[in-house]
Amino acid sequence: MAGEPQEDCLFCKIVTGDIPATVVRETETTVAFRDINPQAPTHVLVVPRVHYPDAASLAAAEPAVAADVLREAAEVAAQDGVDASGFRVVFNTGAGAGQTVFHVHAHVLGGRGLQWPPG
Image (cartoon, rainbow, N blue to C red; front, side, top):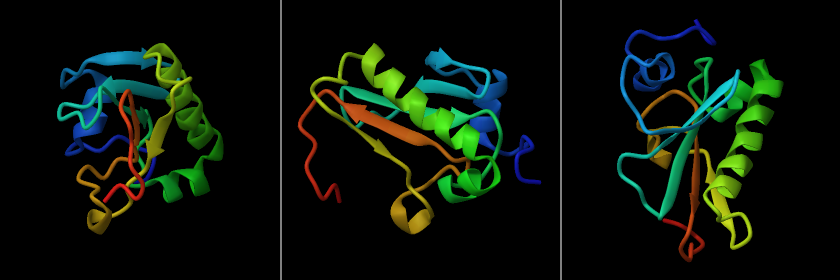
């Protein structure tokens, strides 16, 4: 069921602490942790504590939590000191877009020049 933790979800297990991660920020609604395969000096994932497969389904069901994810992305950028130089927030939606874990997550990338388009 959407919103409920999923037993087979990697990010749900990180949220509950069952799988370790390098957590950099936590709020009542989100957890932010370093990506294990960073694509930039700052590469942090911000996930909601509730389980939804992608950004669209989270925004439709719980818009306040979607806003929390974006707010925390900005806080992560500030904490890592990339807010002034610029950072990117990316939501991949679907396997064709590169999503590999189907628990909505924002990638916060910064600390180097970021080209557009990215892929």
